[in-house]
Length: 391
Image 1 (cartoon, helix red, strand yellow):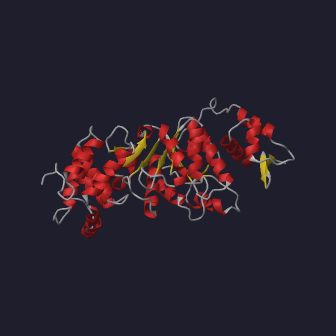
Image 2 (image 1 turned 90 degrees about the vertical axis):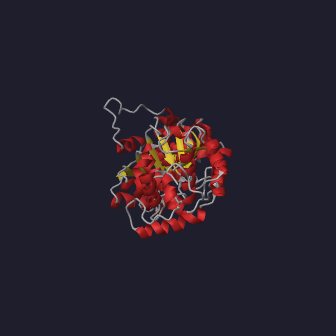
Image 3 (image 1 turned 60 degrees about the vertical axis):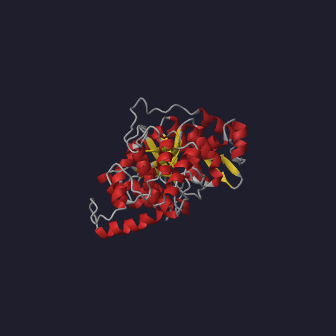
């Protein structure tokens, strides 16, 4: 068998036809081989990554399913043998065909390394880089853009969601692509604020792009795809698992010029994303919260133990990747929305965010974002009944 063929275990007419239908513009051997690897391995499989880097995807498959004793990559031979045992149970042509057809059925695209739209920042992951990306929307938005990862707790507080929305909205309005994981809490607030500002956002998923997870964000994912993209290295039909969430986090960290953790508990999964960012040499920022808040304990841990930079606004986030405004540009013009919201607030009577939106004529998302920022310097304060001007 030559390096231009695919092992018989996955080489069927159905596989070749499905590959040609999904990517008629690409080499069908590479399309079929990378689709096969996507089905065979879990995200971040370094043994598969090293083998593919050394031999190419098709030849790597041939070696993986041959009787070759020594694979042409460095590493423990026992690890190679164990990898083969992991891969073999998934070597079913039907699963590869289902992945290819599933992507095509939802109007998705299979993105290959070397494609113009491929986010080259992911290549920094080396042997742990994805072998392929399954996408819906426009993955080209990440190709040459400045991107920032904004992540945090699912069980976010109103403070955390407000700050996330303020950061994401300002960054997206200035042209940065906001990257996150599509989850409830901080992720969702960041995605929605980027869209609300007319900007672009990308969600990396832990399961296939053919399913919405969480299901409550189905409409949000639909909106994201209109100008941005949802992306996964797990093929269509793949379910999100705890391991896949943790591995998904490395893509979020790699895709961003910087990673900002807005709110996170002591053991939050967002700290995993921060760890990936640090290992890649990406700048890391953390938003401080009340010292008594368990929801911010992880951020304080990053600031204290992991050399994260304290960030409180979009300008400080931009500084993470070296975008420092000159003196003229650093003079921030007055925000008319801020003035409208302050006019709607009372010194004595607390008002909830929905009523403030009605009084000010601003959207509810914008009101929440502004309240989060204003609360940082004490301009406003939150009570059990709502918001009022600070004392």
